[in-house]
Image 1 (cartoon, rainbow, N blue to C red):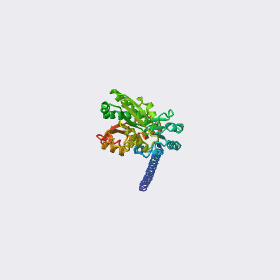
Image 2 (image 1 turned 120 degrees about the vertical axis):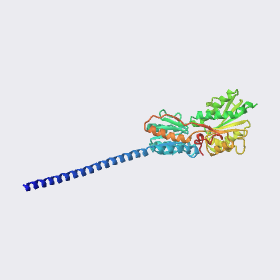
Image 3 (image 1 turned 90 degrees about the horizontal axis):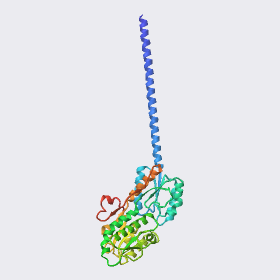
Length: 381
């Protein structure tokens, strides 16, 4: 009997041991299976993240500016770099050596299309010269974002949005702030007086619109005070303005455009108008003509004395002239914002999202407000 009891107990102990062993093996296998699954999931997630990051880095936005050397275009480039860094896209930024080198810009645009980027930003020097490459971009389904002066009269549907200053309105801002400075001079003069308008070219939208905005608004303000106004000089501005044509009136608007976009020629234009005794004011419609105006006055010394000088854009020379009183003030765009918004619009368009024009704005500044936070952020050296 005792033998039977001991046998039963021994058998039960052996069974328990076997059961425990099976359970232990099962638990170990479960842990290994779970760890393997988690490892695979983690690996898949890492791979997906890497692919997503690679996809972002592979998106290229190619910007073709009007130039590259001037401080203005460097400020645009700075804004574009900021946006491309935030959005994780590759940026190519090109511009011709001179803003008169249309052929070089056409070649840059052709190169951009051949690279097949996700989108192209374009500030056209001459749209008619760029039409073939614009059409090639359109055929390749590469969206174009216009910036700065944009791409006026481009083939329908090629330009999906613009990031730019409303240049006509910016010209009006210049006139509205200039007129109070010369109003009394015009009212008290017993003979005709002259206002010069310096433009670097008569082909780009930004320059034309800015110059016409100033001309039309200053004409409106002068006429509202009962004085007559006429316009003479460059044919493009004369024909497109709302001002009466001729060279005899209470106020003569004298528009100059050099034969080429060269600093020396802009300086010569400024000197020509400064040498006319009846000149009381000169408006320079961009940075280069503003600098030409300052340089042209170096041996004449009329600015800040008997001639009111007004400029557009920024740069060290213009800012210093405003601080010293040689120039009464200027209108600034927001070049950093232009570059930033161009890349943002380009990325959105490349993704098939709906995009619309962005007006990046303009502001009047003088020695009293140029150091304020609202203004100084838009002034570049």
